[in-house]
Length: 386
Image 1: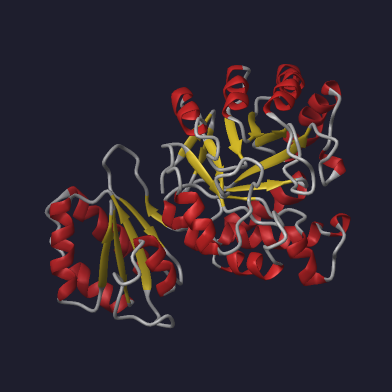
Image 2 (image 1 turned 120 degrees about the vertical axis):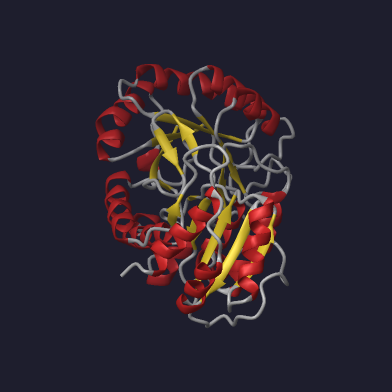
């Protein structure tokens, strides 16, 4: 997984999950405690509440993305941007600011006025969005959406979401958002539950993952808490699972509480990255804990490339990134002599096997290049870990 750097923050595997706190400057926000229209009050909220409570990123929204409200035009957001930029100027804390928008014109103006990240709720539906953020070399959150500026997040199944994220590609500094929630009537609680259970599949994109499930009704329904004001506890439970399943940024209205549970969840979760890229062209090794065949196939993007193992097999699973082609051939040859499954997709190599099979594989794998040495050391470290 690539790491996205912004300011002093490193977002991605091997780094602590980051807290994105919501600061809405629209009266139509669905959660009123996050609304701050007055710029002095908004700046004070950042300095006195959000940053001390653990916020790493402040996400400022200029209009509500809630589908029950009419979409405001670009001119409306540009007008609201004046107030948002004023907040940045008044904030004394050293923090990162994200601008939630769907318009490339607003994104460009926001970048010029001090925003560090663009949070695109329409996932490059504006054809100028990707060229704009690439030209300014700023990180962008790409939320899964159809190619329609008036229908953010209007996708039903997890396959629809994958297709939407793939559409338009990614920049080198893209963070993906699967778009949890009730973005349109066709998406049911069951659709959200299924996507949440399969959250780890989104790691196949090799981009950091942002989740925005805080105070969502599909969580409240599970505990009989239909009112937004009563959904703190269910949101915190979900945040814990999101960290365990690979989320790198947690977006929240409840900064202090979410920061606490994320810190604990991260500290007590299994480490996925055995070895990450420290320099250009260095091999990275990541372990996929308890990976199902379905998740492995997501990583390979080919449903028939991983064979020979059932969903329930007790195996360890690894993804190797940036392995030279010659070394990939060596890995294939060594695996043929063991009960280790190997598959390839673009710059990734997939390994799956039992501890015994992987140990035999490592014994047969020659350590005659830096890349192969990294693979052997990293996988051995994992399979011998108590």
